[in-house]
Amino acid sequence: MQVPELQRAVAAAISTAKALGLQADDAVVLQNSNKLALRLQPCDAFARVAPMAEQVAQFEVELAGRLAEIEAPAAALEPRVPPLVYERDDFAITLWTYYAPVTPELAPADYADALWRLHAGMRTIEITAPHFTDRVAEAQALVANQDQTPELADADRRLLSGMLESLRRTIVARGAAEQLLHGEPHPGNVLSTKIGPLFIDLETCCFGPIEFDLAHVPEAVPEHYRDVDQALLSECRALVLAMVAAWRWDASDQFPNGRQWATHFIDTLRKGPPWPSLQAMARQLEGQG
Image (cartoon, rainbow, N blue to C red; front, side, top):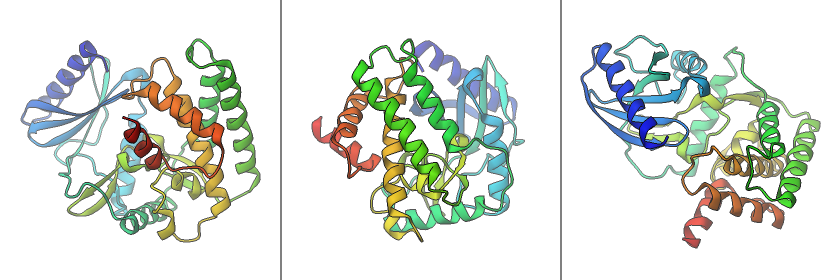
């Protein structure tokens, strides 16, 4: 969010928390991209704020409640307020439990175990969610729209369009078992807490093969996950790289250093397999910096 919108979003979160009886005098910005993550103080609640037009907060709230019932490793809603989506000043605000981080990075085995338990819990939940191919279609539409991706060169546009379509078809044709997934369980969406790893940001949940989720995690994690189809994992990694590349070329994307990421993803896709993990891509970019 840009500064004027950021200020309004922070004010909306603070006033919402106060109206609900929480002591919220200040907010620390934990993440600012297309959506805002805040730590409200001194009540120590976690707030997620999104423009009304861009949010799927009701789905997140419903799923978080279902996951809490089965004690799946996912962040819980704030227990001191009703589990609702709050609307203020054209923002959708949800309030969550704040978890203080305990270690900078999870061990791969612990990461894999937490994701396996999340998947096991999700298999017991009946809820309406998109299919992973719906998310691919969103990326394809973005690549096809020159007004939304004006800086994407024609050759790179053809590359992304072709890869998104061919990989989608190949993965679907494999006929692998599908279930409800997190959708983006990368390291930025898992917290290491004193009660163990917890997954956050449930808005990306979708149905698909577990390899689609595993394509988002560090390369060492799938080695500790049970019954992984390695060929399918490789195809899903390539698909995820192409999808993330599409997001980074979006003119409205607010991801930090987004264009640098976009260019690096295109270069990586042109090189071909073996496909790196998102974490490996981040390490490469840090090395370039």
